[in-house]
Length: 484
Ligand code: GDP
Image 1 (cartoon, rainbow, N blue to C red):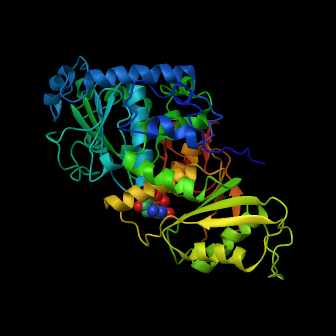
Image 2 (cartoon, helix red, strand yellow):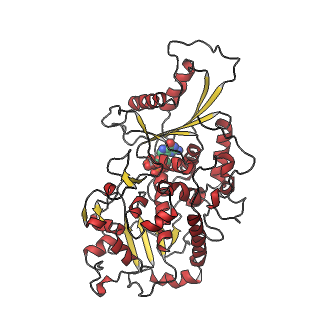
């Protein structure tokens, strides 16, 4: 049984166990210190070492942020000249918005962790609406690239770009075997890491390649994946990562809470919705329904799947289908349950709501079902749409119990921020009902959907889910790997 947490009038864990620095202005970003008025305190504490490294990172970021002396000195290296023999004082990893919002949150988390591991500073292209969605995460500085930054078009970077890492390797413009001076990389390298990357690009994860990239002042990485599990496969990174995250599956839980604070506009939407529809219930269940392909996952199948899953796992009460009678337990205090449903479509909501309207729930549970939006299709980069999508991810994270859809980074974000191990609705294939309808996830960290097939330590292709015990195959995505 879940413990009940009402809204508190002051934060229960203002600095998130030391993750957050003090001294931010509280009005310009209310969510930063208010989140634990709504969310129960995490049972997972960040390690003192992570806290210490974050403070050190914040110092570095301040020293190297746009228009600092360090930044101005490094800016001229933003081209293909050879990387300087002596490393520049400031080194960067650039990020640009790409793919859906959940994917963006996970890829940015990956870039930040890479920055932490390699003493770089992460700077982001604000795209259409990054500043409407997220507060600045680092004190007294900015992570936004200035509008006059020389790179304005990130779309020119793809697998064929002459400065893509895979291309540099293929054309032998750099070598990782230490054979002579051709080992010097250019000052700007593009890391091509989308889901359809090639074997050479995958060498990015390997130890000798990281040794080469160390010298490069400017890196730009593009991925729509949560590549963090790949860092744990690297033997140079792994000891540091294990120190930072003694509980390995907590990487996104901690870094996500550290980095992503909704702006006042989003936070207003979250708190108003929460107070209106979720706060008063004894228990809150979040259900996230994501359809990737309606042929594989038709409405009738998925709605039945959701009902089967929630009834079988005891997450929703059974209904007395033979009865439409009124409640005979009106004199007893009711057990209340608020169900938050998120989906692009409205049909699932009607189905569940009607089920509990037309028939009494066994056990006298009073159930209410709520769905903030049904946007019908993905409208990434439209501000009003993205604000709502972000608010809904946060609302999911404020639930006590979660049911999420396989393979969805939208769901991963909710579960990770909430620190909630969800039940996963397995992916229907060919319109057939998955058996079982859902399974309990084993670890809360997101799945890396398209891991490299190149196994660094074996120097050949293989299964990266079988290399170390703490990186295993995902439950929800075939071929994916995740931290446990
Ligand atoms: P993924 O595709 O499920 O991995 O998640 P993403 O967040 O990367 O991309 C899906 C996008 O579709 C979201 O960012 C939203 O723009 C939209 N979307 C999908 N499901 C929902 C939902 O339940 N609510 C809202 N508001 N938007 C959704």
